Length: 180
Length: 200
Image (cartoon, rainbow over all chains, first blue to last red):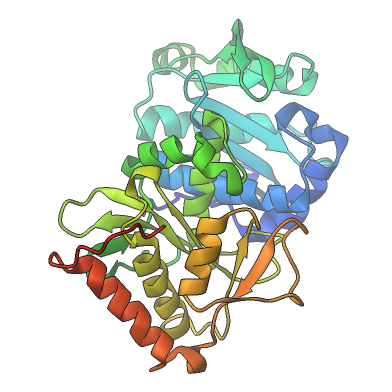
């Protein structure tokens, strides 16, 4: 079994996804805000999505973390490394629950996920797949220093933008802070 | 994380947790019409995600679907075990056999072992199987396992029939249990070459 590592950032804790996150995730996936990330989903479908996140860790050795606000323990979303079949390559993904956007949490957690990918897993590149109308997510990608490289025709989600992240050497040369 | 997935040995089979390397056979079945009674056929993305969910189910519930391996060759024949995703009224005993592996009694042998484990180790006091009424092979297997149609029980979505398995006390030492053991024993016996065709 893959042990899911626990990461900490200044304001957030990244830990294993859990069935305890179902209420928050089901509320999010019932809402229109989920339209960019495969929603809306029914509650039972959302349960399966959490099971998938856990299974992804076991299959790939990495996956989405459940993200909590350090100060309150409140669940704010899932952020992590995602590579199911039919994905063009491994991606850094972020989904924040409604009410927790606009605080820089996605950027903060995605930076930690990216550092894990490069420093622990040895990735030499990473992308993020973003729905063309998902303005909020594109801004996160820009803040992370990624750039829109090409488009990908996903079998289930239609056309998605492929954003290429800075590689490990780019980050070393430029310094993380330059893009934070 | 929860404890590791237990391993069960039967006469001919080893049941182990689903692993990444077993995925191609799962995919071949779930992207084919063999999966027509199990929500399929699925596209490759849906199939992979379902496989991930099978593994995640173990993490969440501490039980789930085992991968059925041949004890000698290690090749996979299908899956069997416990299944209760959100929306399932009760804990289910479920099975799926790859098309090429049907007709050898593997589903009977594996599901019978999974039921023994659920009753003996997990302490289940009942179990059901949700079966599409058109899935005659699966209905026959449910009946060979001693399950009976439960008209009162809640279904998953109204399109499935509920087969209730005999309770642990009714199964232990029963003629049914001996009959299953004998049937499985026959399949495992190289001298036993019956005419005809067992369905699963």
